[in-house]
Image (cartoon, rainbow, N blue to C red; front, side):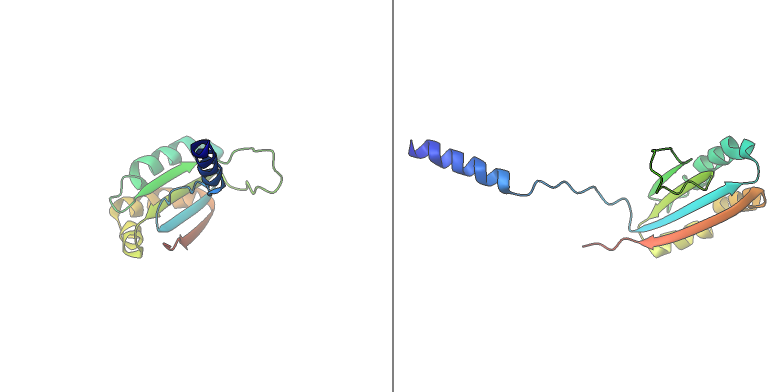
Length: 127
């Protein structure tokens, strides 16, 4: 009986311990770009070039790109055609990306076809 009570007590205490799962960090530096296209018909080509030209730059550690989704929430801002997220392990890696030939070629090719471009850089400090 003592053992049963001990086991039940241990199970109860382990259930009280926080089991909060924390999502993994993607990168220390986030470079987020929101693009409005002059012509929606450019979407597939600019996404393809983003995937081929930006995601393959060596200093990029994480990458995602796509259009906004309708989640049915009116608080979501969806005033862009394409969003690009690039993650970097350091400011130096971000700076290497900015001056990389593929990034320069991408910007040279596509920027004239953008209606607007918003760029945000953020730092996610480690704990």
